Length: 259
Ligand SMILES: NC(=O)c1ccc[n+]([C@@H]2O[C@H](COP(=O)([O-])OP(=O)(O)OC[C@H]3O[C@@H](n4cnc5c(N)ncnc54)[C@H](OP(=O)(O)O)[C@@H]3O)[C@@H](O)[C@H]2O)c1
Image 1 (tube, rainbow, N blue to C red):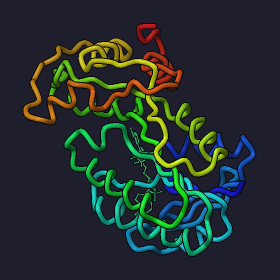
Image 2 (tube, helix red, strand yellow):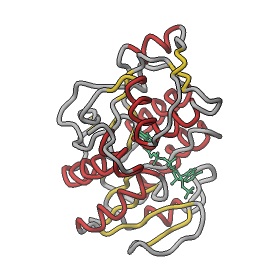
Image 3 (cartoon, helix red, strand yellow):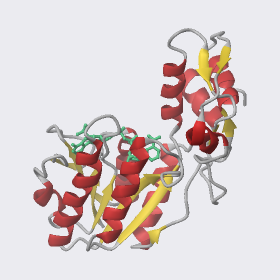
């Protein structure tokens, strides 16, 4: 199967590309910058302008759409860019578009999630048969969040916020199955094997890095706080990934990671 992977240089893309390649998929991969290597054909595309999209989708059986811009021009890139991609893929006769979204996009009032939900709708309204997989946060994202939360010294956060980090390698395996299964619309959400409270994630992260910092509890107000504490970023869906937060901490920082 010939597959175009958008966002192939991102956190997920970097894991997905070798995984799918080793499974025998023939891959074309996108970045805004010219690239070579990794045993795949690279094409330069920009979702913000549509540049390179027609060439990128020509002759592929499926598109795995991972590209996203959470920090800047999100509407332009995630929503309108996804529309540009689905239209180009439709013209090229692509038979399956797989979009990766996030668990809780319809529940948790984070501006980025509004755009992700709108992009899901664009995919569902497009002419290319589709699948949407919502995944929970990757452990690297949680670690970045903890880094940011401890910039001032103590780890500042709402102790009772729940997360269920899923390893990109597990997501990559799930995506390979979805590509082979063909268009399936919204499939079962995909999460990691454990639900963690923020204070537990912070404690184990500090221990793995052998750092001593107090936790400074704050309570996130309003609906955002209620959803984050009430499991808006988690799911009871099964199967889950297998790799745990502790596995990530051991691989990243060594030690036991609380295992
Ligand atoms: N991070 C998480 O915890 C998480 C959890 C669940 C689902 N997801 C979803 O999974 C997908 C991948 O996430 P990620 O964390 O791997 O993302 P990421 O690391 O932020 O990578 C974003 C990718 O998007 C590409 N990109 C950005 N702007 C672009 C533009 N204008 N045109 C074309 N490509 C552009 C970048 O490619 P270049 O810079 O090479 O152009 C990069 O490869 C996203 O849809 C995200 O919402 C993420």
